[in-house]
Length: 187
Image (cartoon, rainbow, N blue to C red; front, side, top):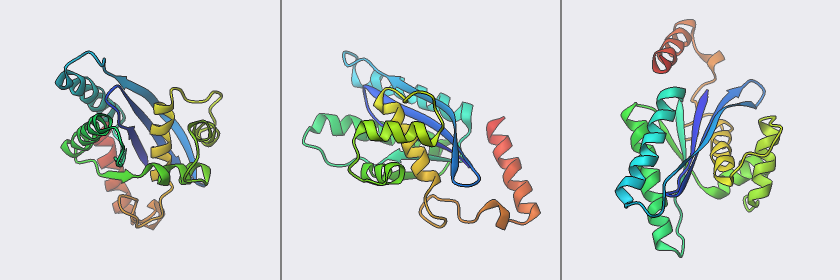
């Protein structure tokens, strides 16, 4: 399964693509940060982020897009921009009929570090360890996007947006159909 994680932000939007491997392992496919200038009009900022998200989904053909669930903050302008970018990510996936899953920051932190209140440095360290990276993913937005993808990969079967059955439980015809569908999306 391939998951594209999105850490939404109007100035910096983390984009991370991870493949799930047997044995609860994961492999880095892509990581980047889409940026927009704070001096631009908000419509142009959203367009810049949307363009980067569209390109990543087109290039990497994920099976699911995992987006950080927006939570309440005291800074209304920050939460508004974050919510707008999260909506753009969900729309980009929906246009391509790619399922979307939302994960809270504490859920993501707990999945990758074992602690729902872990700090940014802990998340970066564990993401690097999980993906066998030689360096910590930077900036933190990139690490958070990868953590979102890993969190989604590790969700229990049957959870919202998680695979309903492992590929080994599918019939040969179902496996062939799923492989053809995925190849068509990547083509």
